[in-house]
View 1 (tube, one colour):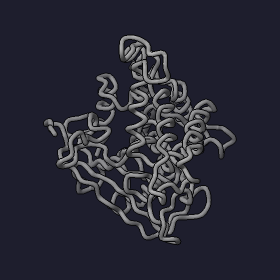
View 2 (cartoon, one colour; view 1 turned 90 degrees about the vertical axis):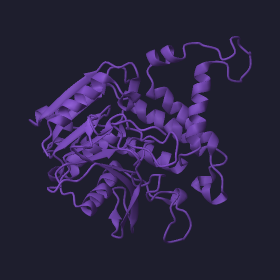
View 3 (tube, one colour; view 1 turned 90 degrees about the horizontal axis):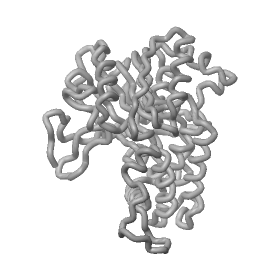
View 4 (cartoon, helix red, strand yellow; view 1 turned 45 degrees about the vertical axis):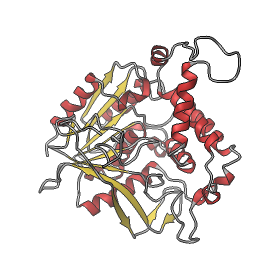
Length: 376
């Protein structure tokens, strides 16, 4: 484990327990819940420098830093968050939280159902982006944060930033939505459904109650992640990294791994199946599918975004075909119709949708410039 001068250093997760019921958008409620979170930097006396980082589908509360005695445990956005980095922890108090329904310690399908004493499994209710935001607001109350200086996230995290600006417009000064969209296209919903069917059709799924049997629907999770990775990368990046390279130099004329891209996808699938929960994957993809603020406004996104009072930064990437720049420009156009303050950057990056996770100089410069101008 090595730490540079710009790392937040060794960190440890914390736990917030909320005993008050939380109503869910899809109906019903959870009688109580817990959220696992991490913080970096110091909350100032005015409590005005807090930034909430919202994670994407497979992310977690572990945004930056490393865990003691755990090699290769850097947070998923460690290149962005830390002293002197674009999201500077010498200026901001940064909060990362594992969403409700997650599998990294927050209340979710792996948690015990208080009504039965057994794990929720498939009985855990469907969660929406709006439910995540409501749960996060309870955490903000617990931390004594009345208003976020900013809420920032990529992909599904960007949707949460938008939802914050609508659900609690008085509690967020800046919303930063990166590689995101105002809703999913039919093609995106289709990719999610294929991934879900891979899990649901796994013989080891057992109707979502596999955990009680001590097993994991590994084959379904592996396939779901492989499908996802194909959509996260651009065609150019795939060709640059893998091309048609053969692992052994010659084709085996079998169904074993021949091409380097096959090896990569299987490795990513196996790794993911080793740490992520299948029910959480189902929940998170459905939350993506259901997010659509304009639905309540007859498809009029400008009218849907009218309650927002925050200033916005919207960032897209040229090779992101899953959340294309055109989808980000829809957000920008709707905000300008409401005369909201909005900055937009379209970054030329070859890495596709996963660009928002990378240390791209242009991308980081845009974020740094915007964040430096936020007053705390």
